[in-house]
Image (cartoon, rainbow, N blue to C red):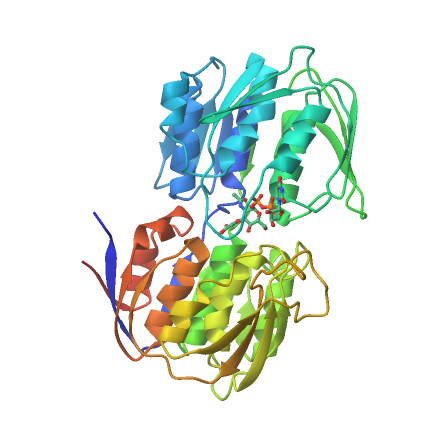
Length: 438
Ligand code: EPU
């Protein structure tokens, strides 16, 4: 059944909410637990769909899982890992992008892996060529099949040199999860260095891995023969924190995000301040609010860490529709992440999208017919509309737009949002939003 939210907008969001562990870290730490010869414990785990999907996939491979949802504590016991039935794995096809990260750990534990077709948001082609090239350079043999890929390592996995043509988060994680138990040294250049990856390195080091990170995107890993389990508290979700911050700004509200962690959000906080948002950091979180007066337009370019995250972009664009003047946006991570602007235009926003690179960087998408830049002219009054959630972050930005808009909106397909935003309906209720599920 389709999930629809009726939103009565035009009121500031005010109150406090709590953000738990990062969606883009927790499932990867869960995969890492497969490498251990003893149980692991992960704390600060949110109740989101990606955690469910990875739990199911781990269970199919014999990992015993216990999730205390209230406490956010996940116990994972991989002592009896076994080969799963392809038909069972296949049932999870299209549900997430995380399954591709099972390759290295399953090859180490079982000598083979079957990975179903991936899912995830439709925000670009999202190929897996870097993943497969990397696995092959470790000695894996990849057999593409009709409904997924089958991978073996007839001669074991050997340390290797990997150079990523682009600092891909997933391909960096793939390399780390494979290299830690490969035979010998691996040198990865062109690595992504997102805080979530650094936290995965923390987990792997706790398990017994030997790895070092240089300032030039080079990671060196010395393979070890055995890893143990880990106990770890996940870093907080900086995308969710920034999304609520943007919601505070767009609705002229005031939201205290308990759990928000300043060191992982430096670039976002600078941008938020430039737009005219106010924030105060304390030991437990960050308060974000609209201080009154006009918001200011900005030039915004998304990039890999330490740049402005692509996942922060969509929610912030809603606030930029309320800034006085022209904002320029250049999306350089995904070629197709501006489709969500069409519904904002329908709601009254003034946004033009362009194929050209409008920022300081000439990016990979410049001469390739992708609408990946935008000019946002504000302020514009938003009015309620019937809109359909296009993807996770686009969906949250629609929620913000509906909450900022005058009148009633019907937001369809809101279940997608629960892939990455824990209990977002309860949080909206805490913030006094007028929303009703129908
Ligand atoms: N890319 C390739 N080939 C590959 C892999 C990636 O060309 O084999 C390209 C992609 O097409 C994209 C760019 O490299 O243009 C970056 O992709 P990356 O691999 O870094 O992304 P990912 O690992 O698939 C993770 C997050 C995304 C987040 C990106 C960038 C998870 C589960 N997903 O994706 O999160 O946008 O890193 O930070 O960690 C989200 O949370 O809404 C989300 C989409």
